[in-house]
Image (cartoon, rainbow, N blue to C red; front, side, top):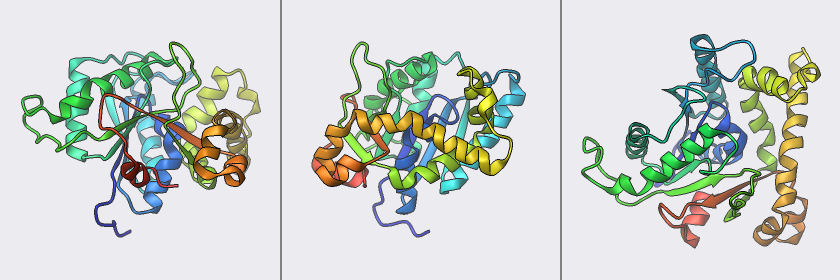
Length: 274
């Protein structure tokens, strides 16, 4: 695929393998369909996300699953070494994120909000927030050149309301990307067919046959993410108009961080194609 000149670059920093796919797989798929560079990163090794399998063996499995998910859209999917369930917004992690942002030079960075149900998600969001301005400071991580300006940092959607709900600064219609998102998620077999159904008391609902599993996964994804479009219907109508906005089934929603680059109309159009 030929990369367009001055193509925007997308970096997704999730806490675990599969976080990027769940919350931003549609935008990642849009970028790749346009030939734009995308990199997905899990800050932890994912070694605790299973009901019977833990440690290095699971970490290796999840690393392979992430790589396979990236291949679905032709993107690199990197898994870092920080322990699953024990991520902290440390100085070490902050410097690693600064280095990653400087190396990849993204125009847009996606991550979790600093308030979320999972401590690893909160740590990831806090660490990215702490790194945002510092990517422009030469004396910090001096072995890598600074960026000319902060990238836009946006928080991926969640359902939590304390201390405040997510603000829908950007909404995008990802209905056409749902099959791609589901194929990416299906690569994370240890999660979507093992751990998450078990954790939700629904392990017996997962079919054995591959085709049936994919259909089951699409239904499950729909049960989780159709409500997102309904929750942010007003914002979808404001962006797409009453006719299209009123019938959108699946949407991704992002809140722009105040701590990094600021989104003007030109950057909005460039970074959030729809």
